[in-house]
Image (cartoon, rainbow, N blue to C red):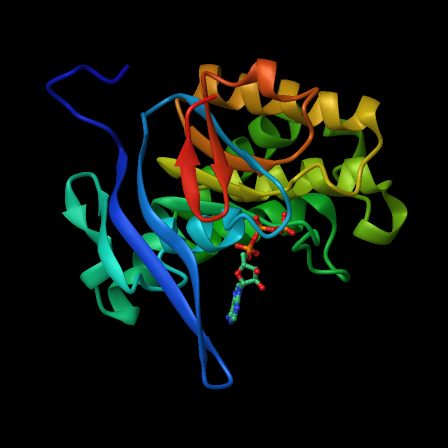
Length: 230
Ligand SMILES: Nc1ncnc2c1ncn2[C@@H]1O[C@H](COP(=O)(O)OP(=O)(O)OP(=O)(O)O)[C@@H](O)[C@H]1O
């Protein structure tokens, strides 16, 4: 659990982000303040183009802000070198994107194993951890299937297992249910709740699906590059 003393896992302070589109400057994020608490499910809601993906990318160090700070465990992630960010992303932050990031030639269990290998987890721990993660997402019976032999929802659940296998502190998910039907979307969110509660991993996800917001511990609403009250 996060105590007040511990502070938030991730803090976004006064973030602005602008892009150059030809000669024109586009201001996408216009002063964002938000935080993600350890072991909580946080959702960013907002219309297409409101800046959710841009913000999530900054939170994971995939891009840098034009102004402001991103503090990960009270440390300035936005100032770190690419090399340091790569290490942090391999070990402490997991990602799930809309397009399922699975390697097509590997089975579900091999895909999950890969993130343990990348994070430098000792080989002796792989078998148990892979089994635990596939069990958590309800796919023990599909362990030896390749992605092409799985449904979209099943592939997304393997992607979740892969993203949490190395026990990151934070999981960032960009529209993880966008390509799924409503039943499967609800199932993915149930898996997220299980991950938050059983593994104490913080999850921050974007979604414009109003049926999912009720499952969050905290919801931030984004409108045109700003966070506005619910
Ligand atoms: N690299 C870039 N260069 C120029 N403009 C960009 C760039 N990245 C994003 N934008 C613009 O920033 C705005 C916000 O994009 P973003 O993808 O963050 O929105 P979003 O809320 O995630 O939308 P969606 O729900 O459709 O994914 C859009 O108008 C987009 O065109």
